[in-house]
Structure formats: C-alpha cells, structure tokens
Length: 178
Image (cartoon, rainbow, N blue to C red; front, side, top):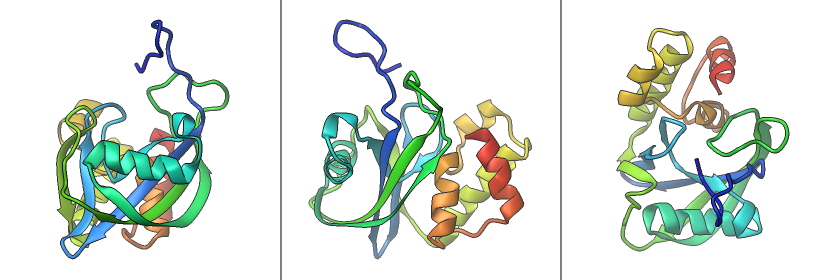
C-alpha cells in the first residue's frame, strides 16, 4: 500500500492518466511491478501532479525515462477500476487517455515496471485474450499474476481505440474483475 509521509495510507484521488507511446516496433507496454497485475502502457494518478497533462508527462518520465515532446488527449471517461490506494469515495477513476510522442532512451523504473517492450497489434490482441480467459475464470488469480494479460482496465480503452477487438460479452465480464 502506498503511504504518505508519517505512515498513513494514501487516499485514491479517483483521477488517472494513461499514455500510449508507439514506435515502428509497436506499442510500449510493461508488466506492472505493483498491483493491479497486468500488462499496460504508462499510467498513474493525477493527484500530486496537479493536472492530467502534467501527470501524463511526469508518469512517462518516471516510469520509462522518456521525455514527452507532444501530447494529444484521445478521450476521457469514468471506469470502475480498483487500485492499491485506499478509496475515498466510490471505487473507480476518471481516466484521461493520451497519445504521446517522446524522445530519449528507454530507461524503465525497476520500482514500477517489469519487462518493458514494444509489442505488435497481434501480440496486444493475445494479451487481451488472456485477460478474457481470466475474466471467464479459465485462469485463477495466481496464474494471471504469474503470466498476465492486459491489465483489465485497459481492455475497453484499447478496444474503443480499435487496437484490440473483443466481443461485448467479454468486455462486460472483464468489467466485473476491475
């Protein structure tokens, strides 16, 4: 659990950003080194950053060591996903999803990331299907943590952006495991 100075638990601000970074090699993703389990692009809470745009820029630098040179808001919406912070109201987050152009060399944070990589659309689809298997209880929690698919909250985002294709029934089941 994330703690504030003095040892008290950090409260969730219910505001998060996600940042899609692409290259000719694919989409930049990594396994989360902290809960929730899953493969995901750069993401984080807005709170200490002050604004979604500033959070997106600073999360990219903090998680993967790159500098944002251009940021474009793709959409924003509420998602009922849990996080490791203590909720201060309804469970979920208002998400701002950005597309970023970056410069610099990939220098991932070992505290936040594991196995960063650029993945092609077919690989992204396979990770989404693993999350579907988890949502449909064909994988238990331990199996999903050991070899994760997409972090569940990302499945609908990536589906809406037409980066993965999932049936509505599977998206609804994934929603139940958020």
